[in-house]
Image 1 (cartoon, rainbow, N blue to C red):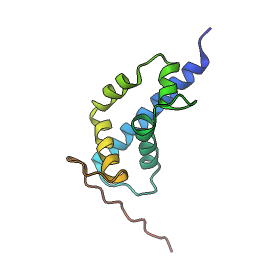
Image 2 (image 1 turned 90 degrees about the vertical axis):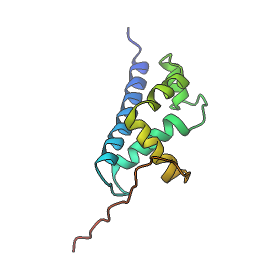
Image 3 (image 1 turned 60 degrees about the horizontal axis):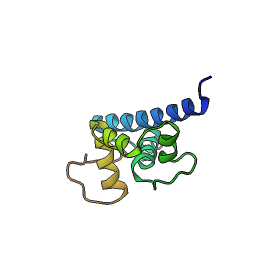
Length: 116
């Protein structure tokens, strides 16, 4: 019998990676609105993978890696080498953490027009 929990956590990790890559692709193609679900999902995922404490609470990146028998530091290194994930990482450090980051994409959110 397959481990259903491990399959679900593997899907969670896969979706987080897809969210970050989707945001990286969108950042390459132009500005997003601050309220864009792509922006929030991607930033949440990059924070979860790279900027949360490595505790073993259920749902943490460390926990998911443990369930999947993966080394979290090795996974982070492999993910960080992917261009779109690196793009979002720089964006996160620059705009969320407010750390000057060379090579970050200049981002100006589009203003939403009100409909009268």
